Amino acid sequence: MSITIKNEEQIQAMREGGKILAEVLEKTCEKAIAGVSTLELDHFAENFIRGKRGIPGFKNYKGFPNTLCTCLNEKIVHGIPRKDEILKEGDLFTVDCGVIYKGMNTDAARTIAIGKISEEKQKLLSVAKETLAVATNTAKPGVHLNEIGKNIQKIVEKAGYHIIHDLTGHGIGKNLHEDPVVLNYWDGNPGPLLKQGMTLAIEPIFAIGTSQMRTLSDNWTLVTEDNSCSIQIENTILITQNGNEVLTKS
Image 1 (cartoon, rainbow, N blue to C red):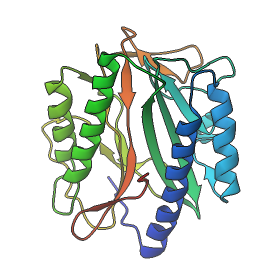
Image 2: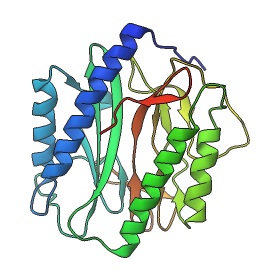
Image 3: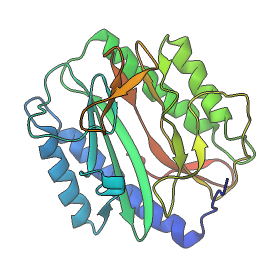
């Protein structure tokens, strides 16, 4: 495992890129209303990022064709935006996006309600927000990395939900995915100590009914095996001297 400590120039680039990412996610979520296609949102996001002199971090990454990953309800991650995928009242909608700015990556995801959603989906959304907040507060110098996953697991399982074990957070910097792997559960290994200058993408991912998933025919989109609703929420953070800084905070 090779965990990079970022220098001040790299950190500043990630701060600036993180602001662009937070803004594009906020504006994309504002535009995400019933009747809009996920491809419309993707075009908006790409134009916005490029207008800020950023580069869409996901587009062409390992062959992924778009700027956004868009997921509705049972879709977990890596959903490809489509012209015929139309948001509708009652959907739970996740938008995941990356930005490269001055050679440094940031990564974040938001999940929102489209209009009025069911109580079941509202509870899932509330638990996700709580989980990300607790996970973020856990991350500070001197804490073992996998305390983050331990605290995520406690909240998710107490709520009766199922962690998608094969999907994790990650280090981030010059590359979108770097060491370390940031688990969303406790595997018995405390992991490395967190140190000032580390940058992590923390992203709890879980579902109502199962931890099992399958891949759709596009070879990208992952959905729950039982078609139960799932959720992803994510921020990029910097470990600071006394705690952390959320670089993609809206």
